[in-house]
Length: 123
Image (tube, rainbow, N blue to C red):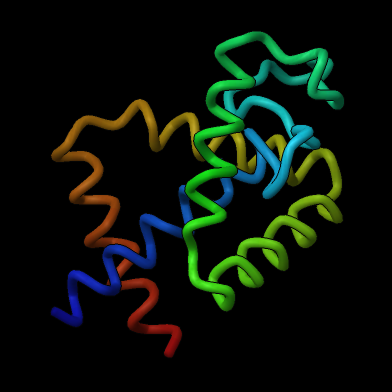
């Protein structure tokens, strides 16, 4: 159970970074697509989003609304931290996320194993 919880936390952390770059916690979307090309202009207004992006933002928003209050607050804090990052750091994180998304199941397992080892040494 503990391992599943740690894996879930790691997965949630990765998804939150991606989520923060895809949509804010509430429409209109303040971020941009996680896989946006470096230097690409990101949509800042709801009206600028494509129908698919709007749908994804609304799904994220509904998921956010279902979270317990303490988790919503955590998402908000993480999003605020994301917004304060320098553009170069955001691009680095987006690149890491894209690499993660490109991994097959076995590569993700190996990544997770190494992450757990690294995290265990930091406690």
